[in-house]
Structure formats: C-alpha cells, structure tokens
Length: 376
Image (cartoon, rainbow, N blue to C red; front, side):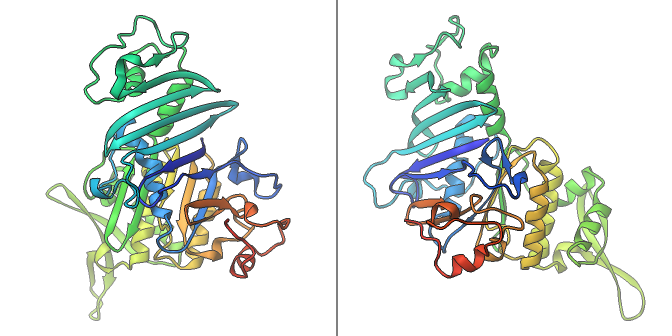
C-alpha cells in the first residue's frame, strides 16, 4: 500500500508537499484502515489548491515503470512549477507491504526523462543510479545476481524496470510487490470535458458499452441505477461490431421506442455509469489503488455518500477521492485521520489540523465549516 508520498517542483507544488497516509488510533470505522495505513482517503480543498495535481503527481510513476495508459494532459511546458527556475521534479514514494517498507525515489529533468532513481528495502539501499553518471551506479549484489549485465544500453528505460523484467527475482520479492502495486494503479474522472483515465490497462477509446457486453452486465447495471432511484429499461444494440447501450421508453401512442442511453442520461448519471464500468473492470479484479478525481462533481450528496459507503466495503484496494462535498466529512462513513485538507502546498489529515481531541460523536462537517481545522 502507499504509505507516504512527497513531490516538489511539479506543477503547482514548488516546495515539497508530503501526503502521509499513516493511520491514527481511532477505534471506529476500522474497515477503512489496513495495516496501520489509511485505505480509504478523501481529500478536500478550495479550487486551484492542487487536489487534481496531487493525483497527477502520484501517477507520474506509471510513465517509466509501466506500459499502461498515461495521463494525456501533462504538457511539457506546464510540467515543472512555473515559478521555479529549477527544471528538476522530485518524487518520493513509501510503500508498506505487511511489515516491510519499500522506498522509491526519482527525479525528472524533462517530461518522461529520468535524471536518477533510488530503491530501498527496509532502509537498505538496493539500487542507486544517476543517468548522467551511469557508470557510477550502485547495485546491491546481495539481491541482484552478479551475472546481471548492468552495463547494458537502457536506451531511456528505467534501470529498475529493466531489472524487474530481466533478472532473477527470487530475492526481490519486495520489488515484485511494488511493481505489481504500481502496475495496478488506476486514476479516473468524469467531468464536463469527458471521461479520462490513466494506469491499470491500455484500454483505448469508448469502452463503456463494450464492458457491459463483456461481462453480460446490462441488467446488473440497470439494478445498480435503481439503487440511486434511476429507472431505465436498458439493452445493448450491436451495429457493425459496435455496442451501444440503449434505453427504451413508451411514446404517446403507446409504442415502445429506444434511444442511446448516453443521449438522455444526465451528467451525474453518466458519472455513475463510468463508476459502474470501472467497478467491473478494476474494482472486482486486481486493482491496487483507485484515485477518483472530483468523483462527485455531478452527484447528489446522497448518491456520493452511497458510492463512498460502497467503496469502503471493498477493502481489497486503496482509494483516494477528491471532493468539495463536505457532507461526506462525517464519522458515519469516514474518520478524522482519513479526511485530508490540502492548501498552500500542505496536506494534512483533519486530526492533525486541530489541537482538540476528536471523538466519534463530533460533527466533522460543522467543525470544518466553523474553522476548527487549520492546515498550517
């Protein structure tokens, strides 16, 4: 699991910002904590403070360690912080697997171009390489077979990725766990400019109706919508190999007609559609981390709470959500150490934003609106 993440000189983060997912000692809602780490987090903050950019920073790792779909909006001219003259962005990840800690650090000198990377297992250095001085790299031969051809021309490939793919991993179980986690990270969002995602797979193009066809899940989706008091009569229509989700209705003459579901569904209903599809494609598969940006931008507060409650019951993966919906800031579905406030290059859990002891009976939303939580 991701335990801690730091980034600097990336987009709006000029100085180092650290996102610490270490859980505190609360006895309620233990299902959203796993192995001492927050497993279900919600990030709040005003517009423009960096909620979305934090997600993009966390998922920067997929550029060089996976072949999965990348974020398509990290343009080179806006990759580094615009106020900084330094053209190096730094990233640091701390993963926790049972009682083991894996720390991975790297720097970029351009979008997609590594300057260096370092890997530690439980504070023991395993790999340390600076690509401007590649011949001086460090490889711990207690873990990596001495026969490994460390002088191979990587041609821009990450050394750690190359080692993972081309060497004996019998002593590198922790590297395998980290790579498996990173390969199965998923970021997605549904906004007015359309759906987008990164990580987890290489799925391209429109895939929502194809997913329903693959899993024979049209009726399941129809029932899923009914839980949000949305009632449609759905079916899949295939034309020249293209699947389209259709919804049926009765016209004034009593005849049954149909139109494409997405032509009549509201923006919020489409967001629920996207959520359901990823639930089938990823949540029920081998996903490790799900980061949903502005996940409830078009949802009624009750629908948003229902989705969060559903995610909380799915404990097999870590979830990070960004939201403006303070209704979700309640101890019925979350905890003070699982709600974070991001502002001015800082992100802290609610419990670290006040000197007061927070109990289960406290109204977190009311406290937040009354200024009880100060992120300084």
